[in-house]
Image (cartoon, rainbow, N blue to C red; front, side, top):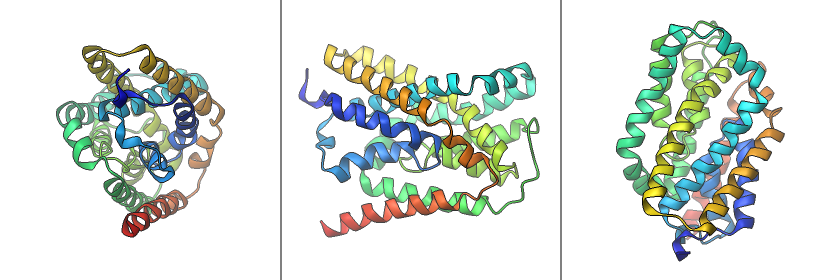
Length: 268
């Protein structure tokens, strides 16, 4: 296997375990996948950027599979009420992120993939969450429109910047549109699945064109498995966000993590 593709299995397992709670809370799982290895002193930068991003997508794939199982009753309930309005909501929430991701993903990764940019992404996302969560909770289930879908889609596109957090910024967008916290959480998780499936397909196609080794395939499989188990075991964390609680504790955690990163960068 090429040296730039090596990711030890034990570290793949550790990051997969981290993915579960970080995915279910609005703290940016992608930021943790970038920052934890950096803070721990791993030789993360020695791994090919395409391999690192593919591994991150693999972790999201495992988390999405766990959500499909853990939230199956809720998903089936949504499917029973699926109509043209909900279809339009999904299309408009998917299109902006799909376009930006396909067209600009590599430029974003190359320019914004480091610890400093990720820390600023954490801070920006935290600020958006605090500001948006001050809005009244006036809208509930079944009230989302295609315009809401477009707003959420733009938010998902912005979340391609590391640290911003797809979960956090879509929660903020939904709260800005005056949805209740519980409904905002449901919308955030619902619109995530098409994006995760699309990102998995795109990265899978790129890896197939480049070619993979048995070692890399094994590492990706281990990461998916660890993420799946961790996310499935962490399902109760969803209730922490769905209850009538403010988003500021998560914003405070994000700001603290960003502060640790920026302090370490200043010492260098």
